[in-house]
Amino acid sequence: MSPQRVLIVGASIAGPALAWWLHRYGFEVTVVERAPALRPGGYKIDIRGAAIDVVEQMGLKERLEGMATDMQFMSFVNRAGRRLVDVPSDLFMGRGEADLEVMRGDLSQILYDETRANVDYRFGDTIAELDPVTGGVSFERAEPQTFDLVIGADGLNSTVRRQVFGGDVVRDLNHVVSIATVPNHLELDRWELVYSVPGRTVNLYSTGRDADAKALFLFGTDQKYEGREQQLEILNTTFRGAGWETDRLLDAVAVADDFYFDTVSQVELDRYAVDRVSLVGDAAYCPSFASGQGTSLALVGAYTLAGELSQSAPATAFATYERLMRPYVARNLKLGRDNLGRMISKSALQSWAGAMMLRVLPKLPMKDALVAKITQPIHDAARAIELPAY
Ligand SMILES: Cc1cc2nc3c(=O)[nH]c(=O)nc-3n(C[C@H](O)[C@H](O)[C@H](O)COP(=O)(O)OP(=O)(O)OC[C@H]3O[C@@H](n4cnc5c(N)ncnc54)[C@H](O)[C@@H]3O)c2cc1C
Image (cartoon, rainbow, N blue to C red):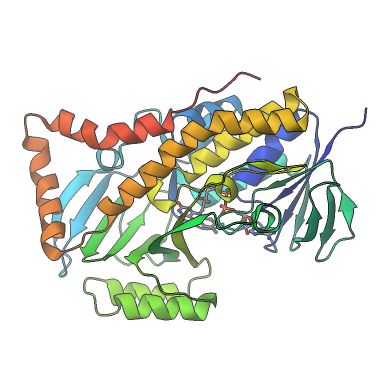
């Protein structure tokens, strides 16, 4: 029998991870990515719980450990830049010993490098039309082609999902996150600074491996925008004059070449497959930036979907994939909603009280219980799936 031909749409995390597993199981894989080349950039991302088992099985864990951000401290600063409190990064992020923190771009590059020799990557193209019954696909640039399966790994605003699944499945949490590489003018070394004003937060950090720094802006808004110009305008109206280093960072972000700006949103589907088409990663179950679990879900989803396809006919494989993923997805979607409330303070008093709480925390007798109360839901959500052995 000739190998089954699979088209994956999207080459960030979920797409190349799925390609890795499908190639291993003997599928013939094509990946189409709209961007002209692999997209760099993004913030630091966590690989936790079941996703650690996945990268271990891929033989990538040691390499990723060598690329870990090695962040040491997170400090809350006031308007004048004075550090109010320094918190060890691992404590604040609820990172367990086995968890890994790497740059999104590094992970994407590794997954791409690991698959490029065996997978047909087509950059600078996308699907135009897709027939879920026949697997017939027309592209914007390439000639039409028919595939046995088509998998959308094209993120939060998935075209595959919109074309095939329809429906209003994106829940906008009414916040926006924007991230860009900026000069490390404060000479931060594996240190993150957090400046929080009501409804808005700015983070700035540099890892041990980067000469530059990353700036992150998180804020509540229901404004609509289109294109970089409007996005920069919203950032400016929201943050300019807010204090600390904010204005300088806004100037740097305006000229950054890896500017990222997206809504904090979740995706909740009532089915994961239609005929020959399924979805993986953010396209299927984006838990939002606030969950810190989007990358782990993408890695685990890729493992599970490919594993099931290696064992059964597509209809059965898609159904089992959905059954295995659903409880895990639900836990992580809830985590995202719960976390967002803690990432943005509603008042100056709340910002101050949060910083003071963290300052006294290490001295409290029940500090371990208090930290566990905050971090346990993260670990539970990260482990809320038992990975089948394929
Ligand atoms: C440049 C970038 C920076 C990011 N930074 C962060 C961050 O700092 N923090 C964070 O939590 N998450 C970030 N994310 C999202 C994060 O990567 C995902 O939440 C998570 O890793 C799941 O990955 P994914 O592969 O499912 O989706 P995504 O990472 O969103 O990748 C989707 C991919 O599909 C491509 N694509 C979209 N539409 C089409 C189409 N029609 N045809 C072909 N290709 C298409 C996109 O260009 C992208 O490469 C970023 C994503 C990108 C692309």
